[in-house]
Image 1: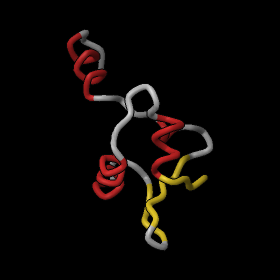
Image 2: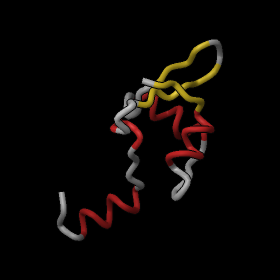
Image 3: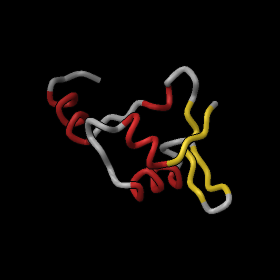
Length: 70
């Protein structure tokens, strides 16, 4: 498992639908995303198998639900 800074996570994995750093930090705090604060720096824990790097935007969730896919 790699640990990367929030900004790098956004640039690498959310470039198509960027969110703010605070949003990613909120996801970490709520447990929606693996991560932690170390030495005053928020880090995202990224699985080597890319499992935790997927993000579905609210727009994509709505479209998926409207189309009947689970």
